[in-house]
Image (cartoon, rainbow, N blue to C red):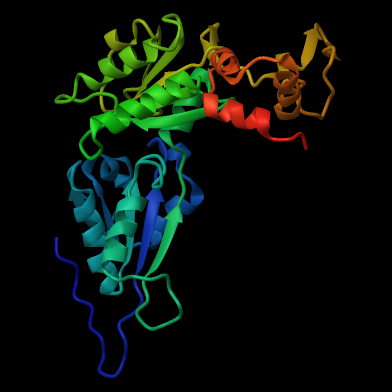
Length: 328
C-alpha cells in the first residue's frame, strides 16, 4: 500500500518523521504496555510481520498497515525509513521486545547505511524511539515458575543468518558454564535437526534428568506448557512459536513449578521460620568461596595450575595468572 503523499508548501521543510520500534510483549492485550498502546495510536503507519499485525488488529482502525512475511525484516525497516522520510510517524512492531531478536537491530543497520544520525534539531531529522515489551524469555519463565533467578542466557537456534558452528560454540559454552538457557527459534518446518543437535551438545555437560520447560504461544489462545527433561526434550511438540527453557544443575521442578535457586543455601541454613548464617559465612559479605576466599584457598593449597584447573573446570592459564598475581 502506498502512503498518502505529503504536500510540502514552497519554502518550508518536510515535517520530521518518527520511527517507533514497538515491543508488543507476548501478544495478549493485557500485557501490552501503556506506551506501546500510545505509540500505535500515535502512528500513521503500522508495519510488521502478519502474525504480529494480527495481535493488535483491533487498534489499527484508520491507519496505513503494511504486512510483511517472516523473512522480510530488512524490507520492513526500509519501508519504515521511507515513510519517516515523508514525515510520517511509523510504528514498526515486534512480538516480545523489539531489542531481543526483534526489529531494533535491523532497523538501526538500515538507518546507519542510509546515513542517518540521531536527531540534532535540524529540520527533517528522523526520531527513533524504542518501546520495550516483555520478551519471550520473561513471559515463558513467568508461566512455569522462577527458572531465571540465577545466571541465564538466550541462544537462537535459527541458522538462517548465523553459521551453525557459531551457534554450536555458544551452546557448548553455555552448557559447560551451567547457565540456564532459553532457546529461541528452536524448530520450524524446514529446520528440524537444530534442536536435536542442541540437545546432544547439552548432554555432553549436563545430567540427562536436567529439567526443561517447553512453552508454546505464551499468553495466546493456543498456549501450551510441557515439562520434560534434557534427555526427552526433543520428543516434545516444538515449533517456531516455542521457547525452550533448559535448567542448570540446581534447577528443580516441584508441584508444577520450575525453580532455579539463587544460591541462598550456600550462605544460610533455614529451619522452619529460623534463618541462620552458615559457619564461615557473613551476612552481607562475599562467600568464603567468593573471589578473595577462593584465591586464598588455591594459593595455600600448594597444588599446581594443571591440577587446580581440572578441579575447578577453569582455563589453566587463568589459574596460573591467579597464582602468580600478588594478593590485594
